[in-house]
Image 1: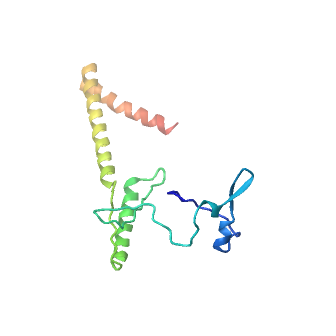
Image 2 (image 1 turned 180 degrees about the vertical axis):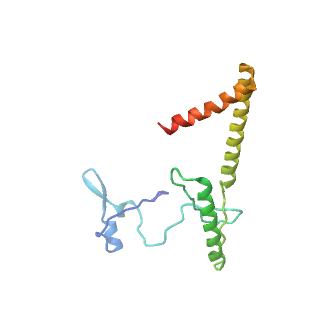
Image 3 (image 1 turned 45 degrees about the horizontal axis):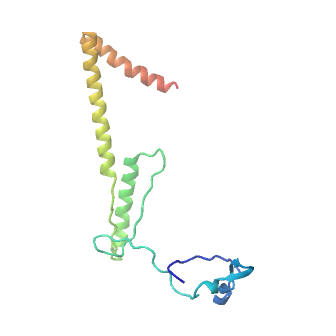
Length: 158
């Protein structure tokens, strides 16, 4: 009764629809409240509880690919693209289209480019500051090379 639906699971105890009606849900004033007291029981199909649509097409299916921890996003996305191509060939015979909705490949490439650009800018600024403070390009170059080598060596032996 009303707008709510409930799932009742009773393995091995229900053989007919009328058996389901005798399942005790709770007790009220010492009397058992049965499933049949709460609403109408019927055998039917599962109703859709949500719709995913794309481009005014109400019958779409959504899937998501999750990457494992510490995996290379570029290699994972390359593998996903290859698999999508294979699936599209098989699904074409059934008049089904597989369309990537959100593709993070561009985002990953843009992020790597931005990080590379930022690191190079940082190196350039450090070199300029070293030249200004040390007064000699040669001394600045020695410091600019020694600092990263010291950092990398430290992380290797940690």
